[in-house]
Length: 355
Ligand SMILES: Cc1cc2ncn([C@H]3O[C@H](COP(=O)(O)O)[C@@H](O)[C@H]3O)c2cc1C
Ligand SMILES: O=C(O)c1cccnc1
Image 1 (cartoon, rainbow, N blue to C red):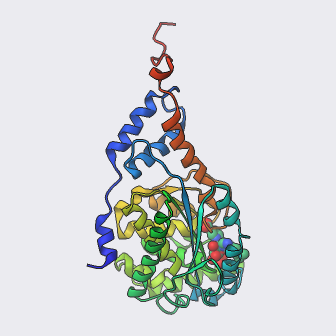
Image 2: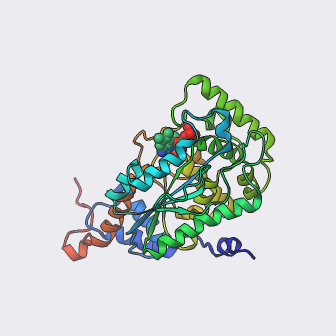
Image 3: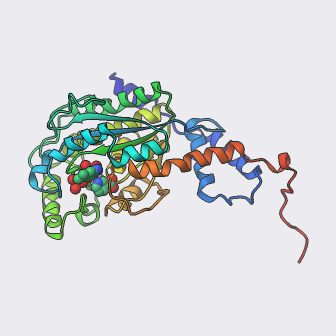
């Protein structure tokens, strides 16, 4: 059995007993039942994920995976392919949105080159774990081989191992890769049967004409693909290297009982890939936000998750997940630190006297 198969077999559903214990405690805390709304739901989810009635999520790791996409040659993005490598240098220099947001939550940040066309070797601080030099153009050929898809998953697994070594207890997964909304749309359509109109959006901000062209290119990719194939084969045909790495990171997180805060459209499709490979991995996913990329709502629905925030972001990099992360911290703090009715001598029973 491969290391990947061993890990897939080790993934267990979230712990129902810890979740139930957290829910019972929430009802004893000094507040009307349920009055902290989704924060209570979040606290219970985190208890189930970590198998701890009083979960802890500090410190978070932000893992940003970068790779290029052959489909960029079709003109499906508003930006040229070289921006992927330039942005990796920007991440390394600390100048991107995710750098700023990761700093605000005291996160451990790692940028991994999984397959940027102009290799990021030599950029200080970037982890080089390359599978190949960008993917094939999915309109005309498979993105990668089955072996390469497995290798890309393992890139994510290794990144989670490093984050755990740093003492991280929660994960935020981000990506950089020009044209990766196209691969994500193709994967989402392949796995859900949704129409192109539902899954294809403007990405970096393309106009109507380019959007129509993007739809035609993705349609070509889908007509070439064997969408009924097993999930790994679909990932190899249509996926991106960074998408596969994020999926591998989701699986490793599930195996280690760490919560993953899912970011935007691309990260959600990667999380969907993880659940296609191992359905129990879905228990470990918290949707950070709903991005403005049309199709993200459908992707979240396919994953069966409700996002915490909706701020009109359309960036990726892990930005929306980093913004949502403080809610996880707050949920854990409320559960652990609020007084119970008994502790505080507050009457727990609702009013029963007749009016
Ligand atoms: C400067 C810049 C920074 C970014 N950070 C994330 N993305 C986002 O945009 C890309 C996806 O959109 P599309 O499929 O239209 O290319 C990804 O790299 C994603 O992470 C960026 C894009 C640009 C241009
Ligand atoms: O939702 C996202 O993650 C997204 C949307 C547009 C461009 N890049 C990323």
